[in-house]
Length: 182
Image (tube, rainbow, N blue to C red):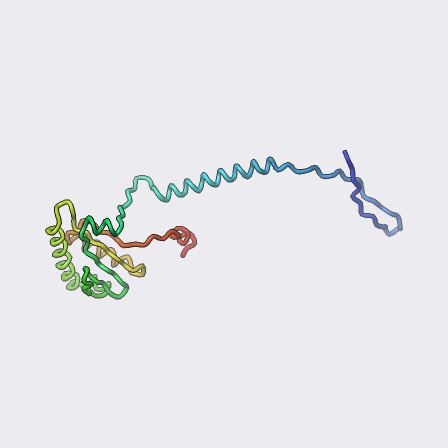
């Protein structure tokens, strides 16, 4: 086995020269075991990530509501549209002003809205065959509070709308933003 002298020559206080002992050369490290460990870690991480994604997309015993694209919705149905902004609610294709979302808790305003929505649901049902049902399409600004959307859902059910859809935009980064707490 080859030896090399790893020395630091220096003089002591007595003036004698001193050297350190011979040290064996370090053996070359084999990276085979390191690669094996990294491969195992990689497989483990990939397996865990795929299982987490599966748990997010298919919870046990849960049925997600269906989605529909705009073209199919217009082709197959005759939706009544509610546009909900933080300061106002617009009804129908003519954008009739209902008032502010806060007025959903005013009994008189809600009675007027209920009458109008009931009439529209009946008209949609009468215009279409029995296979097409009245649909309410809610387009809500993301700053609108959930309690207003909940009230609109209750009204839709009371007025004869059998399906309620929400307009949305696809956001491919929503999970990353959610994870970062945005």
